[in-house]
Structures are given as C-alpha cells and as structure tokens.
Amino acid sequence: MPDYDVAIVGAGPAGAATALRLARAGTRVLLLERSHFERPRVGESLAPEVTPLLRELGVEPPATQPSYGVRSHWGGTGSSSTLTNPHGTGWYVDRAAFDRRLAESAAAAGAELRLDTACRGVAGATSWTLTLSAGATTTARALVDATGRAARLGRHLGADRLAFDRLVAVTAFVPATDPGGFGLVETVPAGWCYSAPAGGGHLVAMLLTDADLGRTGSLTAPEEWRAALGPHTTARLGDVPIPELRTISAASQRLHRPPPTGTAAPGPTWLAVGDAALAQDPITGTGVVRALRSAKTAADVLLGTDPHRFAAYETALDQECTTYLHRRLAFYAAETRWPEAPFWQRRLRTLSARRTSA
Ligand SMILES: Cc1cc2nc3c(=O)[nH]c(=O)nc-3n(C[C@H](O)[C@H](O)[C@H](O)COP(=O)(O)OP(=O)(O)OC[C@H]3O[C@@H](n4cnc5c(N)ncnc54)[C@H](O)[C@@H]3O)c2cc1C
Image (cartoon, rainbow, N blue to C red; front, top):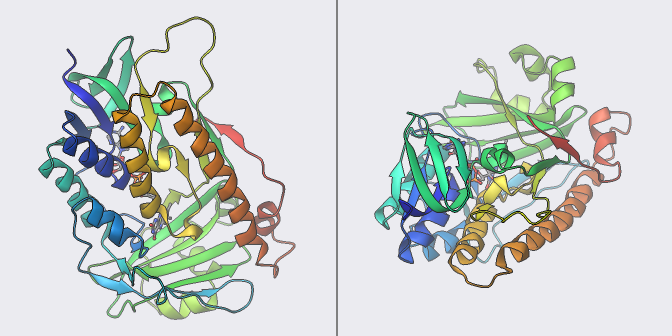
C-alpha cells in the first residue's frame, strides 16, 4: 500500500488549499514545499473574493492593511475601486507569511507538511514513487502538481507548457516609510508598471515587459529599470535606492496534456492545480482567488468516482483558458498610445501559443 493517498508538490495557495480540503475529507495527504517561505514573494494584493474562500477553508482573512482598489493609468486616465465589492475590501499581505499560514492550516487539518523538501522526480506504474531532495523516496496513489508557473511535475510527465507570451516582472522590494494604501498601475512603451504595499513597511514595484525586450533594453539593471518607469510610479518611489532586481516569469500559459495514445495503461492519476494548470497575466489581479477556487475543483476530482472526471477537469480548464485569452486581449486593446512599441504590438496580434521546455 502506498505511503499516502495523495502527494501534493508545492505549498503555494493552490497546493495548500487542496491539501487542506483533502485532509479534511479523511485523505492521507503529503504536502511538499521546497522552501520554508523565507524569501519575499510577489502577489501581495488579495482581491475581496479571497475572504469567503478563506472562510470556507476555516481560515480567518488576514488582519492586515485593507486594499481599497487600484489607481490605474491605462489608456490615458481612469481608476477602479473595490469599495463597491459585496465582499468588502481586499488585503495587502506579506505573501510569504500568508502562504506559510495557509500551509500550516493544511497541516492543522491533518496533512503532513514537509518544508525545505523539493520533489526531484516521479515515476510510477500503479502508484507514484517520488524522489525527494535528500535522496529519500516516498509513494502515493495520486499526485498533484502545484509547483506554480514552472509546472515541474506535469512537464516531467510529458505534458506541454503552452506559453502565450514572454511576460516577466522585473521586481524590487524597497523599504518605504509610507507605502500608501493603494495599488498603482500605469502603462509605458516597454510594458506596464505596478506598485503596492507588500507588508513589513515595504513597497513592491515592478516593470512588466517581455523577457527579450527586458534583455535588449537592459531593464534588469537598476538605472535602466528606473528610467523605464512611468511618472506616477517614479514619483511614488521617490529617490529610494533600488536594491538588486528579481526577474520573475509572469507569462500566460496552460499545461496541455496530450490524450493517451495506443493501448498502454494510463498509469496512476495526476493533475495540475493553480498556476501549474493555467497561469494568467498578473493584470487580472486574481491569482490567489483562482488558486483557491481551483483547489476546490481539484479536491472534488480527486475525491470523486466518475471515470470521466479527469478529462472533464481538463476540458473545463481549456474553456477557462479561452475565455481568459479574450479578456486579456480586451485589457491590452484599451491602451492605444504606443502603436509602434513592440510590447504593445505583440499584445494585439492574434492569439497564438508556443511550446516551452524551459
Ligand atoms: C509578478 C506577479 C505579480 C502577481 N501579483 C498578484 C497579486 O497581487 N494578487 C494575486 O492574487 N495574484 C498575483 N499574482 C498571481 C499569484 O501569485 C499566483 O496566481 C498564485 O501564487 C498561484 O498559486 P499557486 O499555488 O498555483 O503557485 P505558487 O504560488 O507559485 O506556489 C508554488 C509553490 O511550489 C513550490 N515548489 C515549486 N517547485 C517545487 C518542487 N519541485 N518541490 C517542492 N515545492 C516546489 C514553490 O516554492 C511554491 O511555494 C502575481 C503573479 C506574478 C507573476
């Protein structure tokens, strides 16, 4: 008999919430996380819809700085607000602390949480054998890839990562005596800028551009990065020194599983959840909401008995991806000030994807 019913690799919001739901249903769950949430993480703005999703998990919403909305300079002027949202305000959190708290809630519900433990490989015929960072192995009946945009396990198991763009976020966490209580978005020829309070008296500021444009424009160097920011972001940062910049993938992508061919037995079950399954542009501002929602769907699939449920799960994700891509197009079409800039030209081309192995 395998050591666990389900092994979940990655304890971000999607993996932790899936583990929590499964553990509560009496499943023997292993939740692996390669870090101990020691580094600052992006994704600090929680949309108001997070509140009911956390309550459903039995987790109290964070008692941190409320978020009243985003000031946006996109397509000229304009702003949006969450004040009218039926769920009230959103929240600005220290994302690493938020993720750690969710993982600990999964452990409190009965999942076995192992921090500082990466999954290095998986193999299986009737159940999965996972090779862990210290060279140890363990076994599980089903496997969940919750490794985020990297989709490490899914790719290892032969799925294709279809990337729809090469968006990256060149990011700085800077100390701020007054980080303000709002998110700020503004477009620039090279892409767009975002800044928001990130907990602990820090402000996160990023320039979102394409990986190749970032390289050719040296936008990962502090001086060039600062020069590429828009006037509102520049004014917000003031003359604070820019520390080392981190370049983080923000690409839109879908993990595509080719249908089984031939007569070979399909092998033990696995699925991807959260960003590993479908990662969207951060302009949507709903990554954590989607991660928590997808955890609910994934847990239902893993606990279910309908033989078609895994195929139905993939079909629903394909449909969600199509809807999202049209929404993304509408977002970018609203900015018309830089028709000659490659970043903006690319955003308005017909939808197309490329397979990535990196
Ligand atoms: C620049 C940027 C800004 C964003 N801003 C926001 C925002 O303000 N609000 C919002 O709601 N969303 C935001 N998002 C999106 C949001 O962060 C993601 O949608 C969300 O984190 C997805 O959760 P996840 O659990 O699927 O993946 P992740 O949060 O990426 O978690 C994956 C986990 O897997 C672990 N892991 C990876 N490989 C292994 C391995 N081999 N073994 C063990 N563990 C492993 C990682 O350490 C990590 O903890 C942003 C995204 C980007 C790129």
